[in-house]
Image 1 (cartoon, one colour):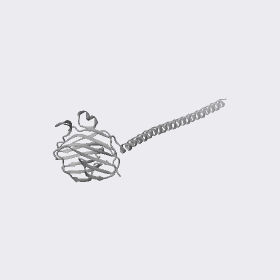
Image 2 (cartoon, helix red, strand yellow):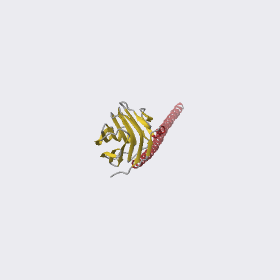
Image 3 (cartoon, helix red, strand yellow):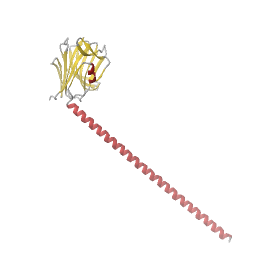
Image 4 (cartoon, one colour):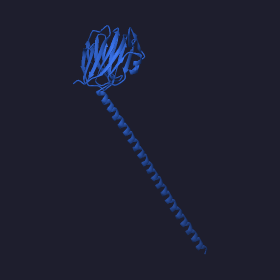
Length: 251
C-alpha cells in the first residue's frame, strides 16, 4: 500500500514538473515573439518616419532650388532700371555702404563722398541686374588711387568692373577672388565732373568716359548681380548720380 502511494506521489511530481517546463517554454517563446514583433513594428515605424522626413526634405529642397533657379534665370535676362540721385533720403536705395561713404554738400551739389584715406570705401545698390548699362556722374579730387564701377556682383570675390587708375582704364572681372583684365587703355582724366559708364551685354563689355568708348572686351556672361562703386587709395571720389539701364544681349 505504501509502495503504491509513493508511486502515485512520484507520478504527480513528474507530471507537475513537465507541465511547469511546458508552460515556461511557451511563455518564453511568446515573450520572444512579442519582443520580435515589437521590434519589427518599431523598425517599420522608424523607416516610415525616415521616409516621410526624407520625402519632405526632398520636396522642400527641390521646390526651393527650382524657385531660386527660376528667379536667377529671370534676373539674368532683365533687371529693373533706376536713377539714383545723391541726397539723404536716397540712402534707402543702397543695399549697403561703408562708414567712410557719406552724404554731404560739395559746392552747390549734393554728393555721396567716398573717403578711403589709404584704405577702401564702397557702396552697392539694391536690385540685381542682368545685361545692363551703368553710368555714374563722378568727380575725382586727386588721382592717387583706384575707382571701380562694379556690376554683376554676387559677393566680394565675384564681380565685373571698369576701373580708373591714374590715366589707365581697366575693364575686367573677378572670379573666385582672381582678377582678369579684359582690356586696358590710356585716357585723359577729366578735371571736373564726368560720366563713367560700363555696359555688359551678353559677352560684350565696354567702358566709356563722357560717352566715348575707351575699352572693349569679351568674356562669358556672368550671373545677375548688384551694381555699385568703390574707391581705394588717397583720392576723394564724389558721386552725384548713378543710372542703371537693362540692355539686350549683343551677339
